[in-house]
Every structure is written in C-alpha cells, then in structure tokens.
Image (cartoon, rainbow, N blue to C red; front, side, top):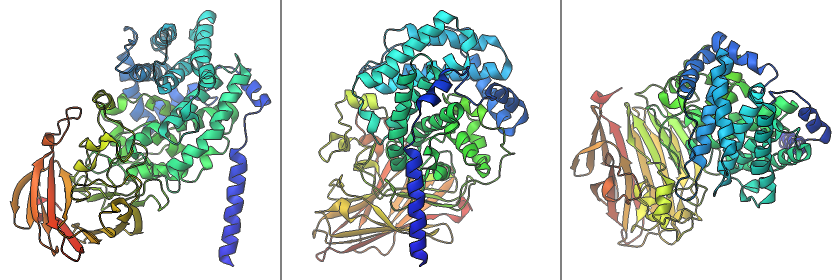
Length: 611
C-alpha cells in the first residue's frame, strides 16, 4: 500500500512540475516588463542591496574588496581590445568585456564612484561599435549580449538617448534576431552551451523588451521550453554535473543568471528551480572540491579549485547557509576569484549569509545511479591532511568525455597521489587536427590527457575502452564503492568489476576482478601521479611528495606481475602541455589460461608522513 501511495504522490508531483515548467511568458507579462524602469535585471532594491551588503554582511565584506581591486584595473584605461583568435574565436573578447562590466558596474554601486560607471559605458559602446560579435561560435555572441545588457540595464542613466538606442539595437540585431534568423544547434541541446546561450539571451530580452516585446517574449519562452531538458540531463537526480566541476561552473552560473533575471522581472522562474537535482547541486561542487586546492578533474575539467557566482547564488536560493563555509571563504580570497567574470553579481544575494560555517558538504557523496556520469566521492574530513577519494563511472562518449571510466583521484596527508590531468587548450588541439567528437575512431584518443594513456583505468593489450560502454556504480557506502565496467571492454573480456575499499587507517585497496580475458593478454592497471617514484622493489612502489611517503603494493594478485613507471612528458603530444611534473605508474600481468584475474593494489600512507 505504501508503495502505491508513494507512486501516486510522486506522479502528482511530476505532473504539477511538468505543468509549471510548460508555463510561458504572456503578452501582458512582457508588456509590464517593457514598461518598467531600469534596472530590471536585479531585485527592485538591488542598488541599495549591493551597497548595504558590502558593509553589513560577512560575505559582502569578503567579496567587495576584490571587486573594487578588479574594477580599479580597468577604470580610466583603454577599453578591451577586440583581437580574434585562431578559428575566428571572439569568446575571450566577450568574456573580457563581461568581466570588466560586471566589476565596474558593481564597484559603482558599492562606492558611488561614477568613474566606474563611465568606464563601463565606454566598454559597452566600444563593443557595440565593432562590426561583429561572432565570427564562428554563438557563445561569443551570448556572453557579449549579457555584458552589454547588464551595462545598459544597470547603468541606464549614464548612457545618452542615442547611446541607449545604439546598444539596444545592437543587442536586438546581433543577438536576439540573429538567434532566430540562423539555425542554432544549441537551442535544444543538453550541454553547457545551451545554458549559457538561453540564459544570456533571456537577460538581453528583458533588458531591451521595450524595443521589441514580441521578440523578447519569444526569446524567453524558447529558453523556458528548452532549459528543462539540459537541466535534467545535467543535475538529475542528485546534482552531479556530467562534464565535471569546471563545466559545472560555466553552465550553472549562467543558469543562475536565468533564475536571477526572471525572478527579478517576472517574480517567477517558471518552475525551473524545481527540476530534480538543482537544489542539490551545491553538494556536488563542494564534494567535488578536494582538500589540497584541486577539484575532481574528470572529463574536460580544469584542476584548480574555484569559487563563482553560482555557489553564492545557490546558497541563497535554497537557503543552504551551511555551505557558506571555510572552503568557499578560502577560495574567495584567492586571486583567481577576482578574475571570475560573474562573481560580482553575488553581491546582490548575500544579505542573509551568516558568519562562515566550519564544515563543508557531507563526507560521502553519490551522484545517483541514473546520473549521466555517475561518481562517488568519499573523504575523512575537510582539512588539508584528510583523505579524499573521487571515483568516476560513465562513458567516454559523454559530452567533453575522456576515456576515464573507472578512474579515480586520491588525496591523503596533504598530497594528491593519484591525479587526473583534466583539460588543456582546445585551440592547440584543433590546430593539430584533433577530432574532438567522441567517436570510437576519433584521433582524440591518441591525445595523452584525453585518451586512455593518462587515466587510472584498466588496460588490456593497450586497447581502447568502448565509447558506447558505460561504468555503472552498483554498490556504495562511506567505506566502499563497487563499479561494473564490463561493457567498456566488450570483446576484451567477459566480466569486469572494480572495487575501492577505504580502511580504518585511511588506506585504500583497489581490487579488479576479471574473467574471460584472452590467455596471454597483457593486463595492466595504471595511475598518474605528481609524486616522485622513489623506488620500485618487487611488488611495491614507493612514492614521495612534500615530505610524505605513499607505498603502493600488489598484494595477493594472481598471477604475479611487474611494476614500472614512465615520465608523462614522453607520451604527451606537441599540442598538449608537457606534463613534466607527472609520472605514469603501471602494474602489468599476463592473463592465465582460464582467463580469470584478480588484481589488488594497496595504497598506504606511511605513519610518519601524516595522521
């Protein structure tokens, strides 16, 4: 009986949610916005909020100095220079203008110094007077449209009537009309690009709604129709982002822009904030940030920890004040935070933030078995010396995917011992003729940091994982993770399970159980490490870093194998970073006649190396 009641309640919730998401902006709603004064893209008391928050709130006092320092870099200086990059890229230029405008406009509201506002106007007019916002990618247009819309809306009184018309008409023609006039593949997509473009154009439509209300309404309704698809793909069921923490930041901070500007203009975001997993995604990014200043860098993700507008906005949106903690404070103090182009917008949403909490997210995080890229993160705590393990399943065929299903990162005693190299410069790869589409025959798999070469996975005769395969997490606790990986190795074996077990002494045991392997095949497990390989002695490897020692032993493996290591830079292509500080470590065996193997590797931090 309870099952049927639960099913009925669940069905009703989904039905109500679906109905709410299908709502759209009416003619009356858009006309009301078109007739409203500026600024429209912030709460009605936004200008006062920014100044008050900078003085009266813990988070505002933390953020404001960095925003002002950043704005001071631009005031009374030449405007951003438009120089296309290889392949007709203007995204770097759009991002520079967006970062300048958000810092300058927010600094104006914090301080009242009109020099900041006048510089933002100069940046906006210069951007509008260039002949194009896009040579190749609509992302370039979207971010520039958001930049000019914020300046136009927030600093409306600093533009002359002729300048306002120039900015508004430029936004209408180059962004909104163009987005309908030309086919836009991203409009119904499921990647971060969909979030960035729809959210930016929604803000632009609201800002200039009085010039063309019908176009503004169509733009916003297109976003309301399409964003739920990418949001469900990106956050359901538990908030984990399939493209990794770095792309979480990109997609999510723009998605939060959609929430912010629609709530400000219409008093609703049309139910999109109720899509399952969105309210939990703050847990994902906290869990995905390790203890030594690095993130869980799976897929095409950078490796450095970060803070952004999304983290601050989501804390307020879902009243997750427990997430305003030491982790986010430390990241906000870093110079990197000042360069984040949307972080100044957080000044609008920190009114209710308390003093920072001492702890961060739960010590165990599971994405949910139905996540696009399932992951598990286990940690002993949030101090620099604490244990941290990130485990990734999923498929190499996912957006921005690497051949890393079954891989993991490991931190212990203040060192990241097992590492994932993350992303590198896409332009250099494209110049080298690398096909970044994740097909089985793509030459992307020859790139060291993208293909199987750099990741902590199983290799059989150096063959590739299957792009159509998928690693599934079948069991999870705060001490153990079990993953089924057979479909990634179809044709190479019959069954394959990998298990990670955390011991009471914070040691890690990784067990690979295989059957149906071709007799005599070379079977190996590997990992990438920034540590020095101090010694290889029999069944043991000794790693050292920062005065700490980690031993990795092949205990109870059958049959016995051999360890070896190789500098990572010897395998990197010219289009990649040199990776001179990294080493690949391998353990290899020959498959026996019965084709069954059990490989067990134990990772133990020396007692004298840490707690």
